[in-house]
Length: 122
Image (cartoon, rainbow, N blue to C red; front, top):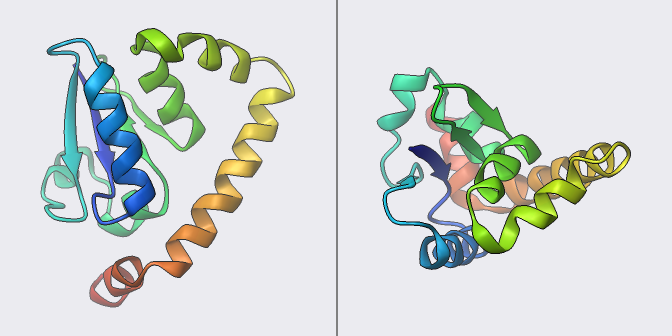
């Protein structure tokens, strides 16, 4: 089972996760809203701040994937998203996607009050 650690207080993030949940094969994913309950992060030794900064996913082998790599693990398990994952894995595309995601994630984290509150309580 793939565990996805997502920010349930982020509107865009929540909409995307709801879409994935609708199309995901039964029993393939565990969805963990770490904004509401960060306790599952203790098991993988990731802080709430780090998980709010960038998407995290734990693959079936126990490996932790962050950012674009987390999306690639998710998309590989979703019927309509596998092709995009294959394209993003191509040299050049992977690097570009990583840079774009990192820029977006940084701005999103800086903009959302609950992310800033997590820093203060960390």
